[in-house]
Image 1: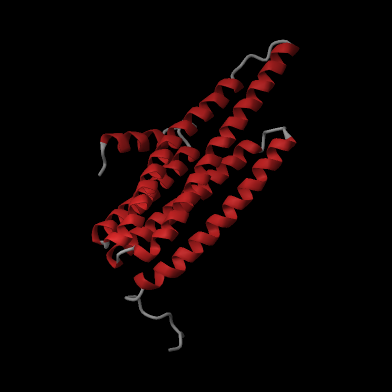
Image 2: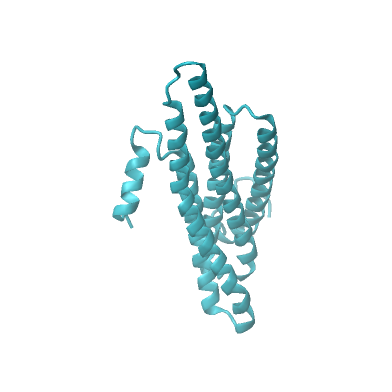
Length: 217
């Protein structure tokens, strides 16, 4: 499990460097969630009748696409932050150089905000896919689907934190208003989907636990 590639990424993430950072980690969490949703879809497909198989095969393909997209976003997030760092290092110099530096920083920050927003969209799509897959999920894979949903939600939440971090320094009111609207919708929809999935999955997993003290029935 601790492959060279995963180990290297974790080592880079833990190093005293801002790249890769939270945005890349959020995308990786989303990719892990999508991979679990893909696995559950594959397990369901293997057991399905032909009528259900026709529906499940596209779900598995969508999950695979989201997994690949989110894995790519982890790299893109690191690259976007590196672009911000390069802009911050531009010489201040005279007034013209200062203005060029300011424009470069603002452009880089906008790019760095849009990448985690895209991560958030992909994580929300993963949660939506988990919801579609729920009626077909084998009993033995419910913990995997629940874990995939929580990881997708964690990726979404982490991505939105990184949108916030970049937007704090952006000076374009129109750009900020547009992102704020979509950010709020992603957060709302993601929270609602996770709550629905947990309400369906957790009772089927927690039956072995003793009833809470004072619970009736």
